[in-house]
Length: 310
Image (tube, rainbow, N blue to C red):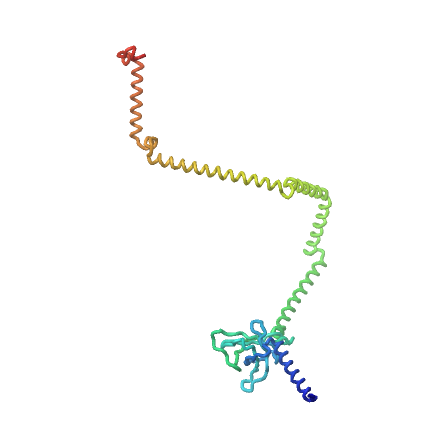
């Protein structure tokens, strides 16, 4: 079957239209075949917003602006826009116009309300927020900034003029200070030149000390490692001896506690005065007996027979 030229042209136009629509939706990061969610917002100033500008949520493109018109009823700028149906715009959401108008980089930022709030119906109105134009704000504050910059430059000019005047006068404090600094620098150069040999000697000594230190440490720090190992062994032995000393101290504490409590013979002797007095009396009796025996041994040996003695 032969297709007429009119039909070919019609099919081409339809195909181009479909491709154009799909391309626009693709570049707007919208689903190619799913429907969108139409909303409106009213602003006092459009801020350079035009149809086709992006609509973003949390920095993600979710739609675009459809129309920017003046409302006949309110006199405000009515902005129609659409977003992906997966974006749930609830009551409490608001939109602001952001970007730089002078550069044409303007967009509509949408801030979503609470997820638990009711959803704004299709074609509903989103509350406007307060946006800002960076270049506009700078333009508004430009006169004040210019005055401040002008004041700073005038002050700088005055300071430079005063500095020039001081430099031109030989007796000025600034000239004296600069002369003193020049003299100090010259003296420092002379000192460094005269002491250069000593500085070289000091650096040589430092290099020698560094080499001796490297030699003492050994290759890759082997000697230091050996010293550390010996030190670790010594500390381990010392810990063991301290543990034994602690055990002896514990035993000594137990012994002293028993003595204080009067346990055992020595404890009774220390804590019971009766034992002391009895022992003292016994020793006195023994001393008296020995003294009497030395003075008159016959008194004790007279009744003994020779057999008994030997």
